[in-house]
Length: 394
Image 1 (cartoon, rainbow, N blue to C red):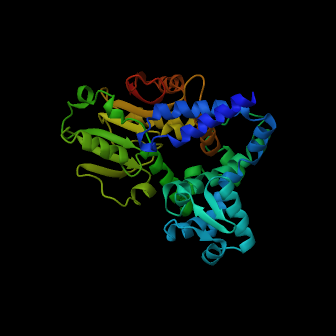
Image 2: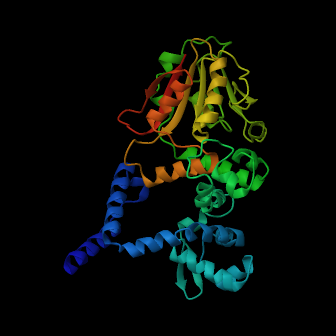
């Protein structure tokens, strides 16, 4: 057995030296190899060590957040990624030297820094991603806030007799922070957390899969629209990523294009929208002011809401639709079985913050049918799960 493990160790070590650069690795191959690595670790790791990793895992996130507060990552970034001694960092960061040394030690143990000498540290690529203003660093701030809900999850369910949350105003977030505010309303009152949330949403759009209009028959469905009619309304479209991509892809399609989101989002937009795209403050729970648009479009909006509030929003859209209007939901879908750890954790995040859920294709169809729509599902060729387009008509 020892020789088998020695040979395996040698093989893995050799493979590490021959890995292609990250940009030359296909996602499918990457995920296949990572899956094999996970299986190998699970087979080798003693159960008690796995238990201890679970128990201590939260220090990965918390140590990074504390280091951000102290200014450790900003100091490395200001130094251009150079090695710094503890004395160097002590002069550039908040807090005392003893705490600094302990946090640096934990960051090095977690592969964020590399300790090159007794009191000298080199930032690894991840470290520079956690500086203030960098999207991954803002992601740490965002999920540190969410951790407050996670830390109180057991107590929340004890108080609710383990009933699944069904109301966006009575979720683990409200319980943990002792507030009656909806998550989004709370963010408005806490600008730093709002900024971190916005940055995370932008990051999420950068890593999304294929654009919806590449596998939805736009030319067949939307080409015949009068110039005076609204062609597409992007409801809850943030600062306009999706509607801008649509405009760039189909610059000659007739009809008006409208971006709708909450006033605080529309009023805080920094970059101008493309010519021909209008911005309109709007809450999806109010009566839709634009009646009879050809398309009402929503991307990853309703996954933030449980069925109770999602059905309210869908009712407002249905009231505004003409007989030939189309509602398009561009949403992620969970598989019915063998959900990845990442997707399952994202579902819990939706539950904690919003009392909501990541839905399977069946759950999305059932939601839309309950709202009174006829539904068709479109996917990228060969794709069984992940992003999907749900076409809902009267």
